[in-house]
Amino acid sequence: MSLQLLITAAGTGTGFGYAQAKARWFPEILLFTGDVNPANEVTASLFSERHLCLPPSAADVYFPVLQGLLREYAIDVYVPLIDAEVAQATALRTTLPTIIACNSQEFCEAAIAKSRYSQWLDIAGIAVPAPLTYDELRNIEHVVAKRDGGFGGRATQIVESADAAHHLLQNGWTLYPYIDGEEYTVDCFPLDGDVATSVRQRLEVKSGVCTKARIVRDDVLAELALHLCQRFSLTEPFCFQTRKAEGLHYLIDINPRLGAGTAMSALNGMDFFAAHLARLSERSPLEFLQPRFAECVVTRQYGEYLMSASP
Image 1 (cartoon, helix red, strand yellow):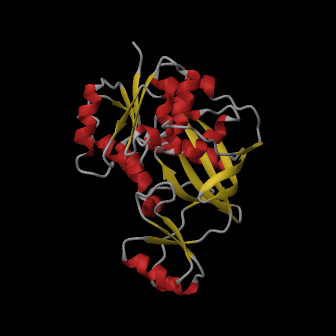
Image 2 (image 1 turned 90 degrees about the vertical axis):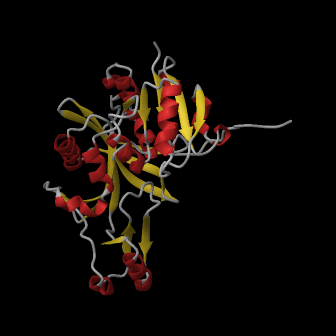
Image 3 (image 1 turned 60 degrees about the vertical axis):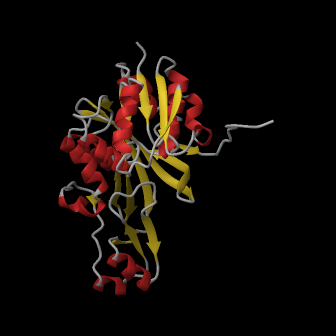
């Protein structure tokens, strides 16, 4: 029988990455896409068997609605892609009628609680930016404001006004010193006691999206990836970000799933989306995790898709 797979938040770049990998390598998978937007506004739906319009993942009715759809369409595997949804889905593993392809609830909750990374991370060569107090704001020109549980840069701001920083601090944001250094994203795929990684150094970012990246080797970041896999007994792919200043990597974000930029790694033979679909199809993921070059530069351009039209 064909695997029936549902990807929610399919309108994200990550959702499109999965849909492209399915179309390219896995014709036997029956893909269902889910999103708050209709099919003609979700590019990934071009590759799906059926598109499901869903309520917002934060709504109280979301999981009851989802549970009904999982049963109605006999979904075998469900892949959530919004961090908070991932964390909620893991807590419902025993009640949802399908396999949930994401990591443990402990890891998901640790990943989205950015302000508490320092409570459990202890690895040489890696630091965690310390949250700032109200009094410390007077001596810093600009700061980074974050909300726990944010994703895709939606809950991150660069603040240069002391008044704005004070306001955010009083309204539940956590403030950190701005680290002026190179930014890296590391795509990770757990492999039976080991981990496959692709390290992407951001060369250019436009409106929060990385448009040029250098893929490099970095032993410290590979060690951090393995540490996370072992510390949380990880089985599903994920990614994390660091900034490097004065020879030290600062961990700034962990995503309990892959990201939109993960598609850039595929150009170097590290197709994490395809590898994940292979594992879900009970095939070896290693076929899709074969790096072509030790170092290379990947650029990104946007594409256009005609989704609907009227005469």
